[in-house]
Length: 120
Image 1: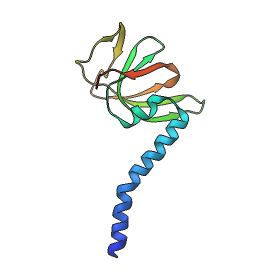
Image 2 (image 1 turned 90 degrees about the vertical axis):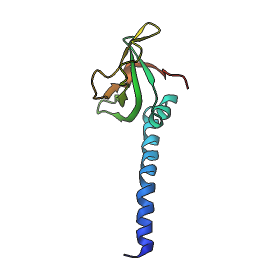
Image 3 (image 1 turned 135 degrees about the horizontal axis):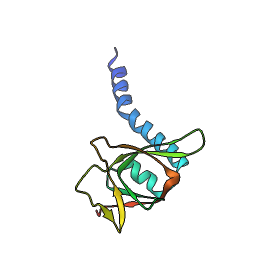
């Protein structure tokens, strides 16, 4: 195989995942055009989602955003897994991963607010 072709293939493999991720983020922003969408998709941190129940779900990041057949927007996220994390925030119960499995899907229509739970 020609060295130039090998080089192009290597460059393509390096750049393609970044371009695909940028395309995914643009698609997600169209589904959920909120300030936190890009922030929580591009960073791993300690974020809180205040639910309509008054509880807070502590997540590390949003992995993807999907729309179901009935039009509901779902956030596929990673739960905060630190069991030393606060049990409550301003008198709201905080939900963290109860096991080592940290995947969660959240119906975005049940989220009232999104915010950071840690100072930088």
